[in-house]
Amino acid sequence: MVLAEILPEVQSLSRIDKIQLVQVITEELERDKSGLIEPGRSYPIWSPDRAFTAAEVMLQAPADERGTP
Image 1 (cartoon, rainbow, N blue to C red):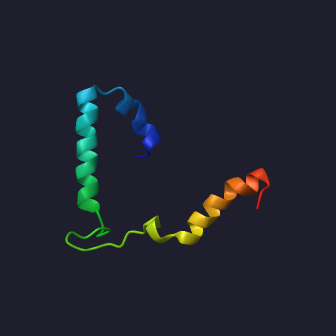
Image 2: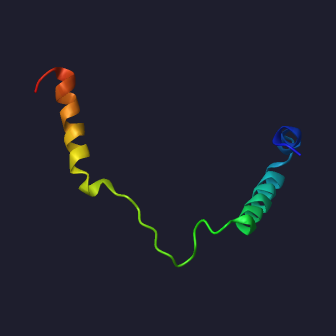
Image 3: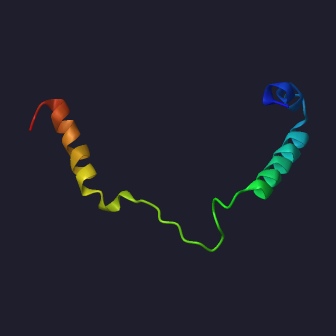
């Protein structure tokens, strides 16, 4: 079954039925997860706090726009 086939029926559901459907789909996705994120494991996250070159480019952009060095 494809989404286009069930979408009209989903749209006709009551608000509470839609909420319950979201819950069922969420639980199904949780069961189907393929270990994308493992509990208790650390994952590195990039942060711009040390992106000095990028900051320099961003600070230079307004000056370039005005035509000043």
